[in-house]
Length: 297
Image 1 (cartoon, one colour):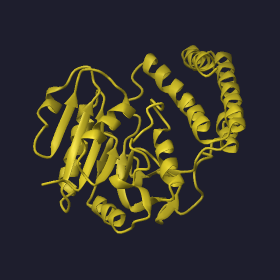
Image 2: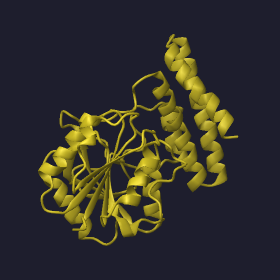
Image 3: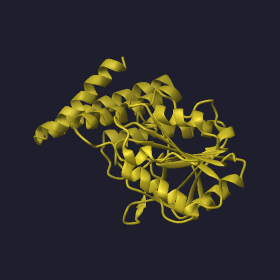
């Protein structure tokens, strides 16, 4: 039987989390037919994942880390469901409220992307939806180092509402509503890929919806902070992705100002960490600074 829902999951050296997520889907999603597609970016396929494949679950592995974005695009190509849910492997379902979110998506033709309320492990709220970046918000984040997240809405988090960006930890949409014939823009190797995706739905005239009547736990950062090299990679791509978004979706003058702001921010951070003798952190931001100068000329 053709599944209604395809869950796309990317694993990287965190197979226990992936297994916990799959178990939670199997436990709490009873009303709809679904398939679970897992792409393992780890260098070696663990025995735990190798035994997963069955009628509803399939694991893809080739021994190469192709990255989060390409892995999701690969999974979309193999997905058969009418509804697509991208879900990080450090997320778990905690009750059957996911079925309510699916019903809400099925019941409205003008929804682009829908996402649940994300919770921390202690069940406190985790930012689940936010605004598109602007020059003003970029200055607040990058130069002023503002503690309050400049992308967060000042609204009631317990109310269903339209928004601009659904956090990429868990989001879903109708496959036939995808604005282009690809899921993620592969220029975004890491970070901001969901911002770009939400912007494309937004421009197509569909409404992105935050749906707090569904709650899931998101551990966060489980596969991006292993060692200094990984931190260099992730930090570089965080700043790079901001630039890519401005270059793709905004005017040339806004892209120019965004680049200036980000370069100044990196200089500021290097100065701070050098002053307080945090050499490892200084090296991480120096790497990002030098790479951006080389690759964004």
